[in-house]
Length: 261
Picture: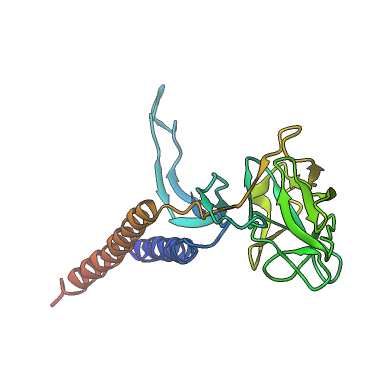
């Protein structure tokens, strides 16, 4: 009877984690380049009271055994990299990656981070930077006398000066990973390489399987509110059912304890 308490408690803990993940997904429904997370569960060890195939009579083996599970645990949270909708911003420095790849971002300590958020700006030195002020890699500088900037599908950054002369000042490179779900969330729309993600490969947009650049657009979050709300209701009901299992165990213990009265 007491086993039911601990088993149901693991279910309540797991559903609480699921609600936390869903809440984060919903909170970032309007975050550019955000990728929703989903929770994976695994069952815990089983207490084997009778092995399947145990001989129950001479020459006769049991077709099944007696195994009682110990509950559930959260195995992992996986980022789902399905594409988000593209939002037209009409800002030439806003870019969306249509397909596979991440923008590379150089941190102040020189480390690289990765993002799908393409809301780019220029800093005081004319460098292309993220909304947090971190320079993209490789670094691209827009001349101070440029009157217009355009970004091509292959990542080429074209500028036009006051005399009408056009020139290419750099090319945006993309990175991709063998296992993007293994990237670590760093906050600020940034992801970090881990051993699970594998080593990144870099390349030109539109070549060798890399996505293309869509200038004047931003990739919206891939969170679907209806799906998340359905998952939220499911998690809430599962939490309630596990709590009822604890109550049922408590009622049975109470009944057993009152037999002698």
